Image (cartoon, rainbow, N blue to C red; front, side, top):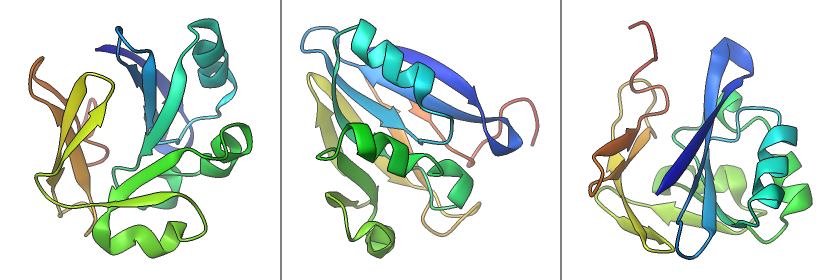
Length: 142
């Protein structure tokens, strides 16, 4: 699995571009950052953007979702099962606790982690021990 992080937006949020090196299947975790440089990377690396994972539904974490959907209108949006109504007009998939989601040969495990927000999800890639936490854990502060 390859990962590239992008920082920006409100509160210095992160967006992550992840992809499978064997299949070029790619996903965005939290479309919280202006998509211009992310889309350039997708095109330059010849990636096949298939999914957007939402860690929670505070607006700053999906602020640029409509921009990504403009360029990739059929992309699958993955979010916690109780929040799918926010994205009902799109290709949305309800995610439950401990669900295993594939992206090429990458397997991510969704972990429901309420606390910061009722619908918070972390995405765990067990093989390499990588955890995408959204705002369940902040970078550089509590």
